[in-house]
Image (cartoon, rainbow over all chains, first blue to last red; front, top):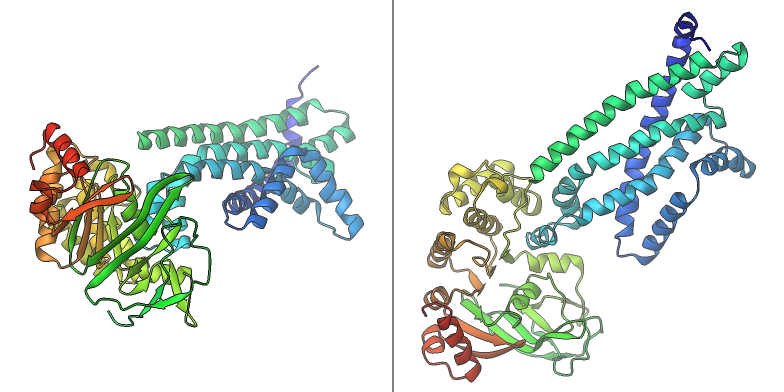
Amino acid sequence: MTFDFDFALQVLPDLVRGFAITIQATVGGSVLALALGLAFALANRSENRLLRVCSGSASEFLRRTPLLVQLFFIFYVLPDVGIVIPPIWAGILALGLHSSAYMSEVYRAGIEAVPKGQWEAALALNYHPVQTWRRVILPQAIPPMVPALGNYVVLMFKETALLAVITVPEAMNTARDIGNSTYQYTEPVTVVGILYLLISIPVVLALRFIERRVHQEAA
Amino acid sequence: MTGKTNLSIKAVGGTGSSQVAEFPYRETRLAQSADKQVEFRSIEKRYGHHQVLSDLSLSIKRGEKLSLIGPSGSGKTTVLRILMTLETIQGGSIWIDGKPLWHEERNGQLVKASQQHLRRQRAKIGMVFQHFNLFPHMTALENISQPQRIVLGRPRVEADVQALELLDMVGLRERAHHYPAQLSGGQKQRVAIARALAMKPEIMLFDEITSALDPELVEEVLNVLREIGRTSDMTMLLVTHEMTFAKEFSDRVLFMDGGRIVEEGEPDQLFSAPTQDRTRSFLRKIIAAGQRI
């Protein structure tokens, strides 16, 4: 097996374009997952039993079924009932839903780590419940969660490769197309792997740095 | 206080079976005496099967300085916590300024209090905790200023000025921009006192506020309390293990044991000539532990 550098350079622009879509999907999925995960976590603590049961079973369902099945369901099954979602949006939706269920557990742990005395002080000062969440609980709960939430974002970043199966032209799909038409898989797939590393290594290092900072502040 | 009602609810204590959730209550007319600011009527409080307060009744006059003493587990902290609405009650009722705390009047009936009613009543009460409970992500100044802004709607400048004045009073003006983690226990507690005072409560609750402090830091916090007692006419309820301070500071002392008030009286009388065996035995233990009374 030889590695043709010229060919690698030649396909690089296409792969980078594909990679832009990978990043779009990651960003979109992360925003959705971060927001929905918090919503799940808050709903799980609600005084309304129905809301608790609904959000609990939804997040359980999302964690107990494979992402690939969820992707297929959203892209290939929903159209049968008249819901047609463009590939990239279906991908973002599936990634976001799937991760949100995991992220809600991170939020839950972070919220529970805030001492009871903080809730009591806020109540004694007559904070409205919304103010208590916004001003007292979440500002203390979220910083320690950043590394764990970040890890789920990195995980999602890698899982975007699955979007190839629902025809999203992200990096992996582009590499496969190039391979299919030129019968040269080595270069495009290697380049895609390197592109993934180029992004994920700095992100992981940054997360470790944040984690150390958070621990230092806690100490 | 205006808007005093003469409504009362039938005492539900004693049997221990009544729940706050049982509504509506049958009402009886009962005159409120004008100088009674807080009234506990036949309070029942349980955690599961553990009875914390049994048939506890207590009246507190406006401006009164009242100390609650007693062995740990006697229920004295619970008295403060249910007044602050940090704990619910299983029976009885609490009245502030002639209005019930956990209930409100609607069409001549007493019904379970709405959140708005609870917030209105809660606004009259401030509390200082054993473990300070300062907000760790805010400076001392912000801890005192933010509640005024977001709860009372004061403009930032006014809230900050008020916060700085209070920090001055507790001797911590130069620490205004320090975070709680950068303050000693005594300093944290003084900030916490300033934070509670900034909300201009009519009733202040102090829950063992020196118990978590190193001995050499106790006095600086008690000095702040003395200053407040001297300069303000707030009603003050104090749960404390500092008998010397309780004696010097209070108008009245309650001795609690096993969820009941065993004995009450003026400090001189209660500390020097207690009438109940349990009070005597408690005070003997305190003296044996090295406190002077």
